[in-house]
Image (cartoon, rainbow, N blue to C red; front, side, top):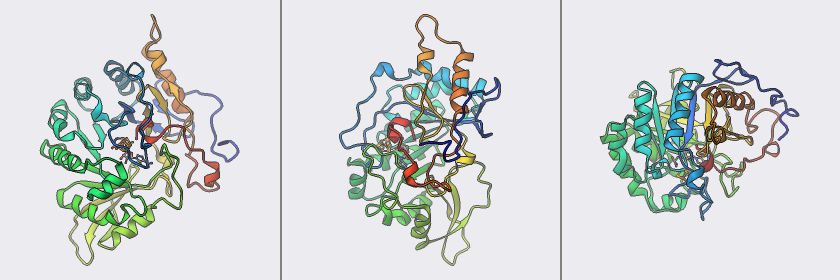
Length: 361
Ligand code: SAM
Ligand code: SF4
């Protein structure tokens, strides 16, 4: 899309000052690093991946554990990164995941390190991840119904996910956040039930509006379940009131949850309205793909390669050069992603080439 034409202002000169952190030309500073560990996944969620999977990156194209540790170190020491989320693809399929977490924890004793996972195989690894120093987990689970789970993920692994959540809880990785995407006609009627299940167990449920990041390019605005609809779906069973705590740049709008007619606070629920109520103005994210490319935004169509610097033959780049390229990439972060913003229709929006699994959600 033509950002200049619609007033979203792509930069003409990249010029973040040394020591300024990951600043962009609109005054935002990225402190929240999302690092994808792999593009591979063992599920095929319809809103993310195609049924046949994608061409996986070759192993030698992926960031190694040592490169990951170096990039995170650079982000934390030189560029003001304050929290880290490991994601993918499915990060649990990476055999060296526990070692990566342990190495990051050794180097950064205070850094919040979280993981977003689909939960398949988590039962076996939850304890080791907790022992390695993982701070917390988000587990994606869109329904408690086996048939809908199969329809959504194209894999019959709901019981594994449930066992994973239980194991993470037992390992002390609390509070567990549960991420759910609702698809019309598939699981939207399961929203209130999922919330009740999470509240009973002390898990924090967050609904994410479906974004046009599916490899099949099947997203439509009419098809997506909006944040307003999600609030209405939950309101049949629960009374929602805005959480008085400051949102503080968090993507989810949080609501306190009570039963109708009761004062008793049962917990909270979050709704991430990336499409209908975008929070671009407060975005603090910097993303690095599994092959070491900086993406300043989930919807970015521009990628900046750090891996080629890390691996530059006999003379790999020093930290300052890598940091400068990362800063330049973030300086170019667009003002907004182009959906749901005044003056912009869907026709102005061009879906990125990468699916969510290949970006790192
Ligand atoms: N495989 C892991 C998982 O599913 O949790 C981590 C990667 S996944 C891409 C991260 C998050 O992105 C998940 O919570 C998933 O539900 C969400 N997601 C994937 N595709 C999406 C889409 N098109 N719109 C909204 N959320 C999406
Ligand atoms: Fe895999 Fe996560 Fe994408 Fe589902 S959302 S296909 S689990 S990467």
